[in-house]
Image 1 (cartoon, rainbow, N blue to C red):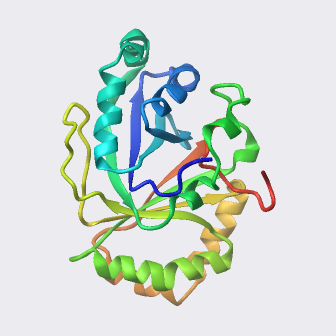
Image 2 (cartoon, rainbow, N blue to C red):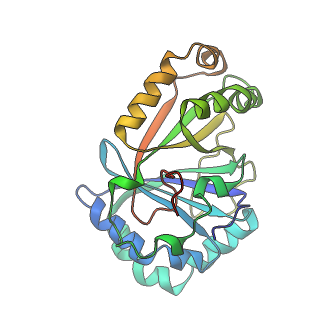
Length: 250
């Protein structure tokens, strides 16, 4: 089973060489899922980005910051990465758009308590309609972040769930300094990140339209923000643990 108490998450957004996305995802899933897990890291989700064909987003978790340092050091300093990095790097144009985050709830909800083994039979690089859509929303707080988090947890999240949004988790920046400078990260103290899942594009459009028509929590949100909410809309691969969680599915 996937661990339920991961304290650190990376949201990694890569720009790939034009036309290389399908090959990159296939190569990534063939070689860099279980090999990272062997070093104590937890690959959680791999995604195409809707409307941005040269982007690849993936999410991995760590038990805590010391485990992150050990895992990154072991993996990127090891023989397996050395043997496979040239081909991966040749397909990447930029890989520094990375948010280092701390979950504010149990990551078992994010993963549906699934593990890599639960998806290992899926062909690497495959995308299927039944994985749904995953939306990653970025909220930038005006002033201190705490009032925005309190507002989200007390008013927004219950309203979203009641409407049918599948809220998988919310995150803030991990405050501990990055102790692995070989991989730069963004640690934005004003940012709240919310991850939700939807059955398909129609489900997403219907629920987001319903949210825009809500006149309670929605109307009070802008006063807490310095900018409009931005969204990454993602298509999970068949091997992605993070996906739309169908009721009653295994």
